[in-house]
Amino acid sequence: MNTFESSPTLSDAPSTNRWSNSGAADPDVLRPSAQPEARQPAASPLQARQSASVQSTDQVDPRRWRGSLLAGAVADALGAPIESKPMDQIREVFGPHGITGLVPERDGIGGITDDTQMTLFTGEALIRAHARQRRAGSSDVRYSTQLAYQRWLHTQGVPWEKARGPRNPTAVPDGWLMGVPGLFKRRAPGATCFFALKGYGQTGEMGTFTHTLNNSKGCGGVMRAAPAALWSDDPAAVFEIGAMTAALTHSHPSGYLPAGALAVMVHTLVRGGSLADALAACRAQLYRWNGHEETTAALDAAVDLSGRGAPTPEKVGTLGGGNVGETALSIAVYSALATNDLNAALLVSVNHDGDSDSTGAVCGNLVGALYGEDAIEPTWLAQLEMREVVEAMAADLLAEFGPRPPADDRWATRYPND
Image 1 (cartoon, rainbow, N blue to C red):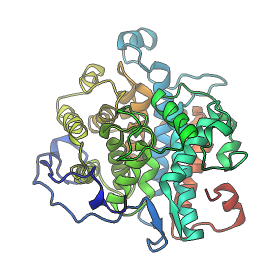
Image 2 (image 1 turned 60 degrees about the horizontal axis):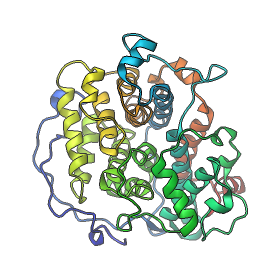
Image 3 (image 1 turned 90 degrees about the vertical axis):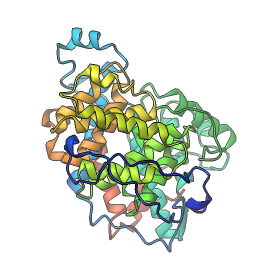
C-alpha cells in the first residue's frame, strides 16, 4: 500500500463524531460535536524513505511516555492472576473490592504476561526500522515488525529455524532482547498470535490490511501497539503503523483498528493532550477506515457509560469481556474516563469477569500517558517483573525518535538492521 488513497480499508463515508475536543478529561464535557472534515490522505509510512525526515520527540513528555509503558506493564501484572475468572470468585479470594494489588509470583515479584512481552518487541521493531531508515535511506517497518514478532515466537519455545521465516537467513536471533532471560518464558500467549506467527515461519506470508490470515478480532493486537505512538508526528501515520502491527496477526478490522486507535490516543496524551483531546484525535482517524463501526460503537459505549455514576465491575461487564479488540479498548477508555486517578483506573480495568490482563495493559498505556510515571503506585513498581527492561525500552524509543538518535556501534549492535 503506497498511499492511504489506494487502501481499500479506508472509508469514504465519515460518520458522526461523538467526541468533542474540549481539552478536559471529565466525561461530562464529552458531548456530540460537528462531523470532522475529511482530510487529504498522507503517504503511507510502511515503506519509509529518508525523505521523510527523522521524527522528533521534542514535544513528548518523557514522564508521560515512561508512564505509558510502565503503567501498561503494571496493569498487565495486576490483571494476570484474575484473567477470565468470575467476579464472584475474585471477590471471594481478594475481598469485596476485588484485587487491589500485585500478587507476587515468586520473590515478591508480580509477573507480566505476553502483553508486555509483545509490547517490548513492538518497540524493538520500530527502533530497528527507524534506525535502518537513517543508516540505509529506506526501511520496511512491516517486515521489521514481523521479524520482531518471530523473535518473540522463538522466546515462546519455537526453534529459530522454524520461527525465523524463509526470508531470514540468520543462524541465531539478534538484538538485546534476546539476552533477557525473563522473556524466554511462555505466558499463555494468545492462540491467534501464536499460530499466525508460526504460519509466517512456514510460508513467509505476512498479514496485511488486504491479505488476510484469519477473521480474528482478538485483543492480542491492541494490547501491544502503544510504542507506535512515537513513530511520527502525524496522527494518520501513527494510526496506520499501530493498525499494521496488529494486522500481522489479526485480520478482522476490529482486531487491528483498535490498535491504531490506541496508538493515536497515546500519541496525543504523551504530547500533553487531555483524554478528550485523545478521544477526538482517535475518532478523527477511525472514521476514515472501512470496518470502523464496531470500534467506534464500543468507544461510544465507554463514553456513555462513564457518565452514569461510579464504576463497578458489573458496569464494566456491560461493555464486553475485553477478549476482542474493540471491547478491550472500550473497557480501558471507560476505566480512564470514570476515574480521576491512575491507580484507581487500573483497578477498574482489571476487576471484571473478562480478559483482565489485556484490558489492564491497554488502560495502563492510556492513563500512564495521561498522568505520568510519578502517579503509579510505588509499591507496584517495586514489585513489577522486568521493570528495568520496560524502562530501558521506553528510554531507547525516546532516544531513537529524538532529535539526535544514537549512531554509535553499540546502538547498531543493540538494534541491528533487519
